[in-house]
Image (cartoon, rainbow, N blue to C red; front, side, top):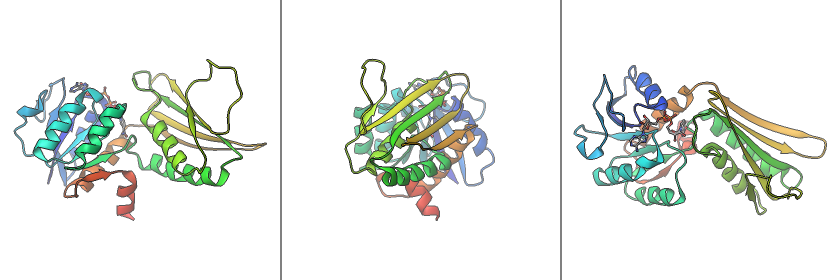
Length: 252
Ligand SMILES: NC(=O)c1ccc[n+]([C@@H]2O[C@H](COP(=O)([O-])OP(=O)(O)OC[C@H]3O[C@@H](n4cnc5c(N)ncnc54)[C@H](O)[C@@H]3O)[C@@H](O)[C@H]2O)c1
């Protein structure tokens, strides 16, 4: 049985993971970490140094404010980390990269297999269409989301950039300057409203034709299922950075 510490356990994603793991024969939550320590199942700590349970892996869906404490805890106790929290700063990403020299770290701004398939498709499209099509990404999320653009939109843009030969500029806002769009631009646009779980639409607009690849998450379970798979995959791995591509390839 794999023992999981669930960081952000009292949040929306934390609750979905708790429910899913109640019926999992291979992994269970042994304790949680959250500023809200309410619990009727497992112990929840607001300070990681108080954790007494034996923990094999951490799943984190919390807030960038938790990162320093998580990095210190995982590094000291050599516990693998599945990092799903989005909106980390560049300095925080560097800390995570440093941590991955000591322990295995699985990081993905989107744990859904469907989104990772979308990424594979748009990378292929971008390399075929380069030079003739303008690329724009539109993401939509609920009105409680703090970071914009979404971590997934940035991940999609980064993956597209890696498959293009030419220079790429990300453009988030066009209201402040009156000029035509450059071919090198990837436009990234955020819409926030209601209870939208998550939509990512990649548009390739050419002369007289448009190709769109779109993923819509209608529930949070897709992310929770991916994160639990990631936790099971990570236990026993060598230190280093891992992502959904590694997980998907390991299952083929
Ligand atoms: N990678 C993915 O696939 C994926 C999918 C969904 C959500 N997310 C990300 O996961 C994170 C959590 O999402 P959510 O919808 O569950 O959010 P949420 O706000 O519902 O839950 C966050 C939880 O973290 C706790 N928390 C906040 N600050 C804390 C602190 N300083 N110390 C300890 N606990 C703290 C809160 O009390 C809350 O219980 C967000 O960054 C979100 O963007 C990632």
